[in-house]
Length: 58
Image 1 (cartoon, rainbow, N blue to C red):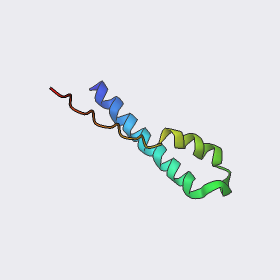
Image 2: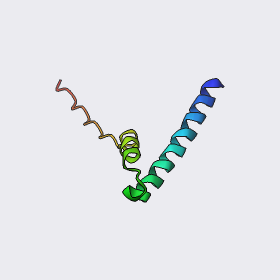
Image 3: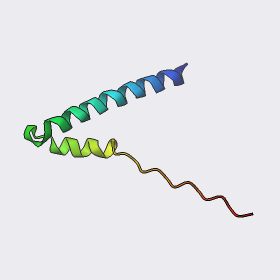
Image 4: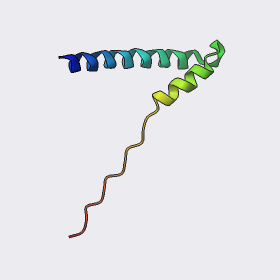
């Protein structure tokens, strides 16, 4: 049950942080949030999918 709690809390924290990031991006540089946006952007950057491995010829 403890693992489930950790997963739930982590998910809720991630969701809340993503909302903050999106609000900060919407506010833009006018609010002086550029450093925070850049730092959060590294955390929420989309990762590129790895290419599927080609099956080995038999």
